[in-house]
Length: 163
Image (cartoon, rainbow, N blue to C red; front, side, top):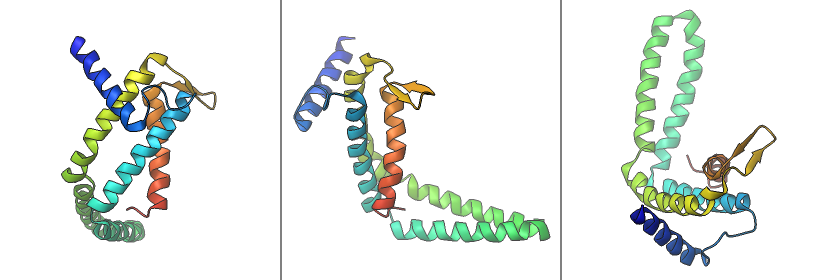
């Protein structure tokens, strides 16, 4: 327990020095988490853009889209041929997964994300649930982070033209 609190304290101080504070960034934890999520999503998006083969990924996506259109047309006429096309589609999906699960990218992004998660858990964990989503459900810091992360990642990938 002492080791865990020491680690949390050192993460909090380190991130606080980087950001210029050791307490929340703004008056609202939702805005804080949004800003942190925006920074981490930007970091991950830029790492993906510059450490992955964007040309190959975009070509694979286009090939997969075209083969899926052909498969739909052929499915009713010739199911055996469609099955063969589906096997080719699965091979392309596996190749796409290899590009997306690049160890170089995963290692580059994992350590900073773990530090940010430790910082956020220390700072916002004790607050409990505080982000109300259109009156349906309430999230704590992790649910809020995931919600904003999905939104920010989609927007940044579109803006920065990342495959």
